[in-house]
Length: 269
Image (cartoon, rainbow, N blue to C red):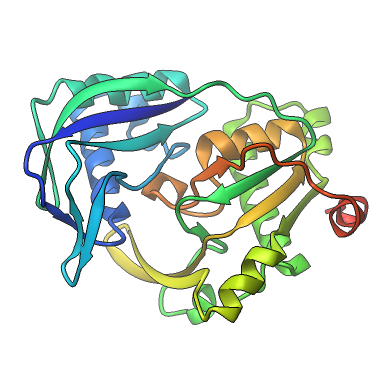
């Protein structure tokens, strides 16, 4: 279930850091603990976007000036989404950075039926590999068009799906075809304009700070429909439960023949 959480902004001009996923991760974790449901204490198959609204940029970060702001929250576990909504709307107000937010309403996003491929766009950075303390490998740049990039995403996705124990052996066998094909025109334009689609981000896990490389770009993913549904609901890559790896659909996307279809035929992990 994907929902759009809508808040009234009590103090227009309030500021959030440019990348404020860690603040949202703390908020969600606080809501989980507040509700007292032990079955959700260690639950991690969920995902969320950044705060969206009318903004202006300064050295301090993002100043929000719209009367309302939104947050997309998602999980394949509908009961968990309902649990978070209940805890959130039991609070009269929420302080996030210097913003004061008043929970107002929820909009359910339309359910999507997937085929064997879908064009997505990252709306929060995709973390490719799991960091290790004092190891710089998680900061290494890997080109999105490489098989290595696709292999890393496949391994993290399959690992998360297997941990759910919700799939039969036949289904798991069908998950082996998996290939990411980046929008190379988009990447080329960014390169030519000296703009970045891969940056270093800080992420905190068990009170340890890691520096990881995150990627934001459009791509077509060829995979089993259940894999596509899982990623759309729970995010892609590592640290999805900390607000990384949220994707959205690219409207009216129809992958062209050629390199993309060839990659699908070659993909077998």
